[in-house]
Length: 230
Image (tube, rainbow, N blue to C red):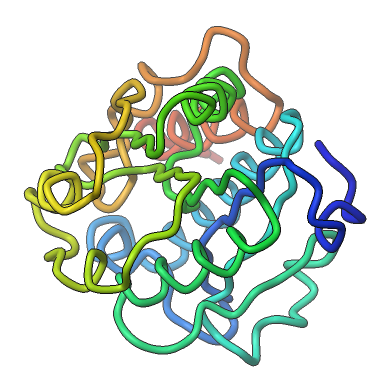
């Protein structure tokens, strides 16, 4: 991973923003919690955050936390990497703001969430390489959205605000209004609901990180809890 000094140097490089919520300030994984309970959903969120962060750290890229809450910028959970407040408004406005902010200092910007712990170093590197010769790259999500957006050119806010978010048409609608056709990465599953957990095991890379292995162990324990008999 590139060092933090690059963040202010304006050197030709790539930045990635991981969009997050601070658990002490906002509800997290509410749709997942509806199926598995709030405590289990928070456990998954913490493990997924760790897995995504550790994978990103293996790539030559500058990592930022894109934090939903302004009060969360100094939360200990985000120590070690720069934080940016996403600003107010809907998801479109927030993504546009972070993308354009980082694009002022980097020639390539990637946006991801913390919902796809199976994302691999190879996928991230493919996204960076794609932006050598293309303006945009997208990682399609199974639910019709996307787990990664990347670009190297500025975009108008109306592109983002015209998209219906959290629907099966989200990715398709975004691609339709982008100035040029994006390159597609392999499809992955964003974990939003209990049913999504079943896809994580089969989508894990062949060489998994210790943090990804902990995700698999957590899913195994969730699906087949160990009973204690006294």
